[in-house]
Amino acid sequence: MPLPNVMQTGKSGMVAAKAQMATTSHNISNANTEGYSRQRVQQKADNPTPFGQKNMIGQGTLIARTERINDNYIEKQIRSAARDLSHMEEKDLALKQTEDIFNEMGGEGLNRVVAKFFNEFRKLANEPDNEAVRQSVRESTQAVANDFHRLRGSVEEVRTHLDSRIEGFTAEANALAEQVKDLNLRIKVQELSGAPANDLRDQRDLAMKKLSTYVDTSVHLDKDGAYCVDIKGVGPLVNGPNAEKFGVYRSPADEDGKPENSFAIRYSGHASDDITHALKGGKIGALLEVRDQTLSSILNRLDELASAITESVNAIHREGVTRYGTKGVDFFKPLAGTERASAYIGLSDAIANDVNQIAAGAVPDAPGDNRIAVAISQLQNMRVMDHGNATVDSFYNGIVSDVGVVAGRNRNALVQQKDISMQLDKMREQISGVSMDEETANLLQYQRAFDASAKVISVADQCLETVLNLRR
Image 1 (cartoon, helix red, strand yellow):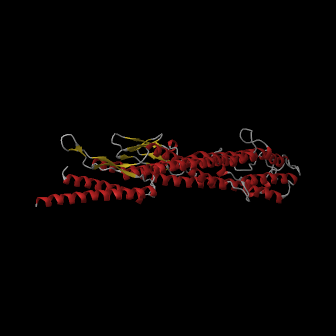
Image 2 (cartoon, one colour):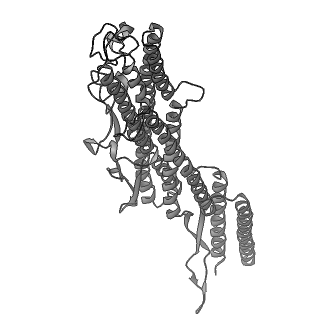
């Protein structure tokens, strides 16, 4: 084998060792980079050359490729786990806000205020002609109305806060979809040039993991190896070099200030479609679930409770007579139905302006008649709610306990999901993570290989010089 070929063989070893050291250095530098997959240079023997009549001599080494150590199955599992974990974490935060509304420790909660209202009617039954007691009845009634208004306002405030967060999350998800689209293009361009796009692929996987935390997605590769991302139940969000968007559309509140259904999510792939109820999973799905199920249920049940109290008390009160001997006076303002009843409940104008309009008795000119006051006070223990299956108190306690049950189940699931995510992260770290000890050992190994290849060149050079000197 000619000595220049020996030198070329040594050079190939130096080039390979240099590439190995550069890749190892890259691994060490990115040991703490989120989403980074360690890389490894794959070498292969160069094609041999004939030497003599029946022999072949190797010509050194070639760099086959720089491999990205990554497991697509694990990445898929991590995306799914990240979606579920983010969903539960965001749901936990939203439910905590909801629970705080009903945290009645040390305060006058609605059930206590309603109990006081009925108790004031018991006092009125004992002293139907006492104007001070009548004043207390009116004040306790106003407290009931105020607490209904407070509760509804607090729930709607949480709802508005969730709407704001959803709006922010949709913008972040759209930005990540754009990032995936851009990375698809950059990876294609770089790999068409023959260079591996390992770091860009890491960035794309990380962007996909983050996107999965916002909404439930599925990913598949097109013929060019680009990520195609679908929003489950909706349609494509990223299709190779193209990205759709989904955004928030707000409609104005109605003439009564009704906020329900004033907020929707639409999708640019089908601009006229409201996809709000199709979005599941992730942070956005969690907030929509709490908003459209938990909070809507609370508001509906508060309305049902306010309507039942209003109609039940009014039905009895209209049968009684005021101190003026008149009959048919409503105690509460009449409601058109259950819709937004908790926002509209309040004293009738007649009672608000004159406590003598409160009917304690059933017949006129009957001092001490307390039959109406007694009948109203007895409503507290009557099953007037849930089609005759619950009292006012148990119905309200059911609202509070149901929120606690949902929150408790979610917290238990959250603890388990954190463990699952942690285990998957450990698995990824074992496969794709950078071990500083291993990389340091590799660095020394490649340094020795570089030095040895340099020694080959040095020896070949000395031999060549000796040959040249022989010719002189």
